[in-house]
Image 1 (cartoon, rainbow, N blue to C red):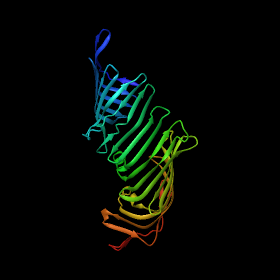
Image 2: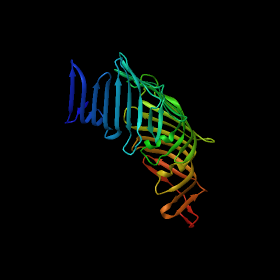
Image 3: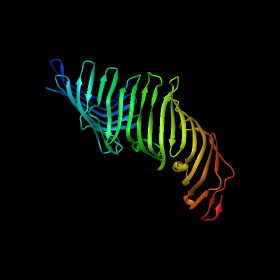
Image 4: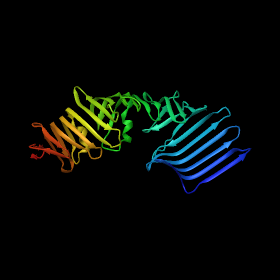
Length: 363
């Protein structure tokens, strides 16, 4: 799955049947779904063996992953050395990440350690890498041990094997979930809160996924919802992931069970039960309505492909209020609930009156 560009420059310098210097230049290199642009690789051998790699851009499925990549390595005669990796993430992000440290070349593996000044730039912040972290490269596997990023009191941990069957443990400690917002493609969703917990993904075990998360002061679209608990598991066939969630404030306001298959069909099945759930969370999604308010109670069943799912069930919304800015009107009804029936791709509302007290109108 390797494809070279049409242009390639390659130079070797030999002495006593050994390669002293090596130089490779190519405008592009394709490896499976990865595309590397403007590659420049050099090696210089003296008392130390020096490697330098420059890559202008790395693409994954035509999307830019990394920019301005620079890797340098020095190896001594005892097969020990040092390395420094620098890169940026996206053209608009000027701050680079710096990962550096030492390594040992063992008989069957490379052991990489990390210096105290290694950091990764993420969510407009520099996250330090725990100096106790280790990366072990073997012929058929990659291991991470005690690997952790931290920013003040926030810690993200990773440990396990990346080779199939993959076995990884992800952990979060005092992690502010608003760091995930730049990664969410839907700009109508904004999350906040403090995440704690861990989850284990092990392809060789049953269940394949296990672990719990707890998100305190969970806020969605600037609406404080309370405490979110997530419990992850899989079914007897290990072909689907189940997420069981509960949102609690003074009382339980929502519970849900979501099933996501692991067969790349990208379908979802979710059952949701709500009790006085604040519908203001949905305000950014419903245009041209704004300032949506009310408390929703009911049951919903969501199923189908992620990009064209269906909804069935019924909700009752009390104390409904909303505005229509371009009409300069504000409607409400505190005397009767708004009942909505969901049937696949349709919504049905019957016999509901909206009142505009400012203009003394009804709809």
